[in-house]
Amino acid sequence: GQNIDQPTEMTATEGAIVQINCTYQTSGFNGLFWYQQHAGEAPTFLSYNVLDGLEEKGRFSSFLSRSKGYSYLLLKELQMKDSASYLCAVRRNRDDKIIFGKGTRLHILP
Amino acid sequence: DVKVTQSSRYLVKRTGEKVFLECVQDMDHENMFWYRQDPGLGLRLIYFSYDVKMKEKGDIPEGYSVSREKKERFSLILESASTNQTSMYLCASMTDNTDTQYFGPGTRLTVL
Image 1 (cartoon, chains in turn purple, brown):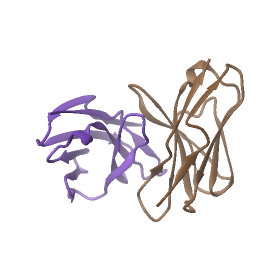
Image 2 (image 1 turned 180 degrees about the vertical axis):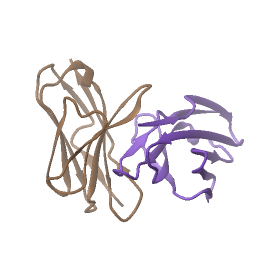
Image 3 (image 1 turned 30 degrees about the vertical axis):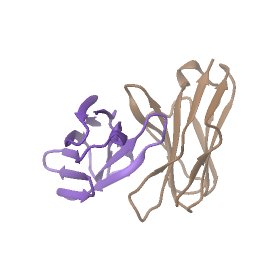
Image 4 (image 1 turned 60 degrees about the vertical axis):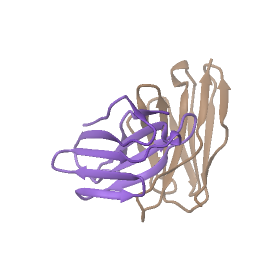
């Protein structure tokens, strides 16, 4: 089976840094995705980690530890437009299915 | 730019009706997916397809079927709609060569 956990909601202040954690337990692991989803819109791809370590893309970074079954998405210099849900998803290697967590709703305060 | 389109943004149907949700992608992607998204439950995989005429069950296939007669089109079928199938339905596509899944805008289906 599989289990993907992330916090339901988080709140942060404009200009600050926020870290959204995701832990997973899955039978076979092939990589971990992060998606951003604004209310009423489709998810958009942010990052995909296969190997351990930190990958940086502008204000967003994603970290993976395969041995710990743990990832985080780090958002720097928060802007109001970053208010959205952030979805963690795991790709299983036995059937290539992509399984999503329930998402973390991030609220940005001015 | 990859484009994934879905036939309707909003749809209202009655219990027992047969419902077709269409998804089309224009980037020659091999893989296509149907998810439903519900508050508190996140995105759940209904069916996916690796190639034309091929389909695989996801985690919640009950009450649904799919059709992939052409590479660019993946249809989700509700044979007899029920109220518990009221949800947001999201289609996605992905090529074998990248790890990016592109989503359509979603269809919000209400079954009365």
